[in-house]
Length: 441
Image (cartoon, rainbow, N blue to C red; front, side, top):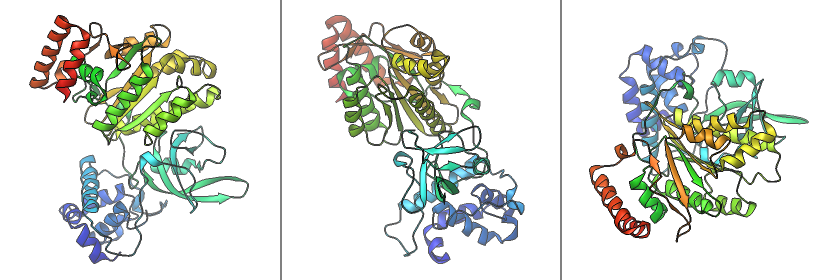
């Protein structure tokens, strides 16, 4: 695309970057992988930055020569602003202004592996030396593309990142990724990223709306609301409707938060239920039906999807991880790990709201308070007690609670919750559910 066309489309980006001095512009350019930013004029540097960040120019190959290898010290707010302005400009394009193709960064919810055109994209799984690109739900294959140690180091890749790029084939061996084009659905950045484990955890500040999942969830939305970043455990006896609950809650999350990333560890699902769930939520990353599958492979997928959820949260997004059930997941880890309870606890305990960042919400079903479930119960910030109901499931609201749940409600919602508690006390659960459905409408 010619410079005139790029300027016409991305004028807000140009004006934003151009207001900084040349040294600050070089730092921003380094963050987007622009080579040798000290050797070109400010205008040319901004245009190269716009081309790479928008996908109209291919990412510049990394080299070990020149000033471009200096780490970028551009503030995160500058990087975020450039990306946001790029996205806004692309969204306003009504038609392509040039026949030149644009690089489409990988949609993180549709990651595959090898393409037919020398490309590949998938979830990064790091090993002792380098790593591999796994499938969209963390599934492993012998021909999964290889990631070299240098590529991992140059791009600061972590397990759970979704990466796309160009491959180099070697006869008789799996393809290797030769160049990274996208990381987590955007142009690769060469700037320090926040680490999930180093981010401060705070109490949820925003509610995770579940009211669209039916009367029982509408009532729970008011009486024991869940927030983004909650660690919720759902105690479910046999035949209490846990599978219907998972379907309903996942549907409510998808309806209320379409931008949130949905990840599911469902080792207790039957194969038929797995198919039904994947058909209902095609954008979700699902690892299900562990029966008959190698325990070590399923355990590796569980860990990788948990890492994926962390990458979403540390980059400022919202991830929701469903587990059905903790007992089934513990059985998988028992066959693959010397300490199954610890592995389950680590995955459940990852749920949190990050200060200044995104959130990872974990909603886990547990049939009984024993083993890993007992440990998770101690770590939980919300507990729901599932019961069989007229519509498949309901809750025992006398025992269910959400820590600091009232802080997630508006004044109007608090008044509705008080009304619902009064109906529950005076007329019973059935009347409360009917009233919750009316309030939801």
